[in-house]
Image (cartoon, rainbow, N blue to C red):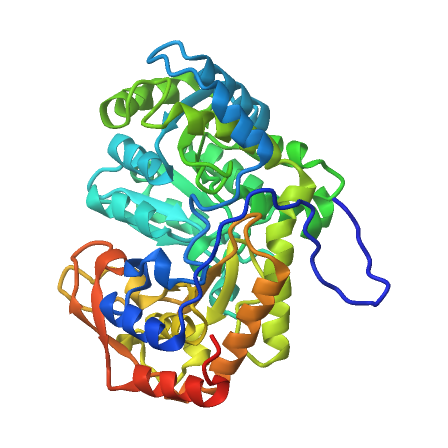
Length: 482
């Protein structure tokens, strides 16, 4: 990847692309933001684009496409069967992962659905480094349970551990011996663990997990949606493999895994997904589920135009100059906030900058959803939409008891090739101001709570008038400025 040093001595990320299509942004003033978040019932998922300045909710499906991707979309073959588009996508996946078979699906959670339908039954136990909301929901819906096996250091927001996404091999072995390998349909390894700050696993740890699984004849499943970030960290942090190319690292991991699935809304810069594998028996087990739930085996619920874009995007995901930009921008934002005393997850991971809400607003109890409240406060202070990754993102226990999350985070996602450095600096400025005013922020409570995935659609209200107080503090310091 490019090695750029500034004569001034500054350490700042440099975009290795140029903008050729621009989209105008809205910049609503503070009173409009206050009204908008109230109408959205204090759930940033319910905000409208017109009320948002910088949308850092997610990196899913909102990454900037390249000129090569856009041009590829024009050659799409929409034949229902035997499509040349599917052939090109299959070739791209084989080139990336060196796998023989591809099963398309409309996005990553569709793959999770199929895997759960095919393999999970009541009493099944699924070990993993850490859960993702939809992956866990599909497993528990089928009567299985998730066992998270990260090391304790992974759940400490501030740390020097470079690979917080690693599985504890001793705990994994103990679990297999305890529940029996026959009750473990697969072990799931998530690249760039989403809910603990986009933290990677090491290649060596992944290979050790796969070796143990093979010894017990247990399938291994890789969620590769955030693989490009994880790949960057292996390349730059894991000395034993730093001499390998991005493709060699990818092929080494893929050869050890039984099933790889991905959301192309993240990996591939487009909208779709799929599963790939080398074992024809596994392919035959899963292909009927694709046809039943997603579509024919040559499109799997995807638009052929998107499939063409994914084929190009997967190749771009091996370009070190492309995969380095996101982590470098995130590291810059994390570093600058840390200098200003703002509590953030360290080391900087992939996907986005993660604020440690448990420390940022340590006066708010978990039952009052501190990460959710801080997400609202960030929006009020800046017009930036982030995402709660804490107790709101968990589901209640069957008896209705609140399940408190291991971490209370606000995720400020960094979609690939989207934001400029000046926009990131604006975010740093407003979040730093908010940290000075953090004692004004209060909690939230649900007034309408869906039984499943409540963080998507739930409606909340503030405990007290802290939102009005925060708006008043903003006006006192910034006047009529946004």
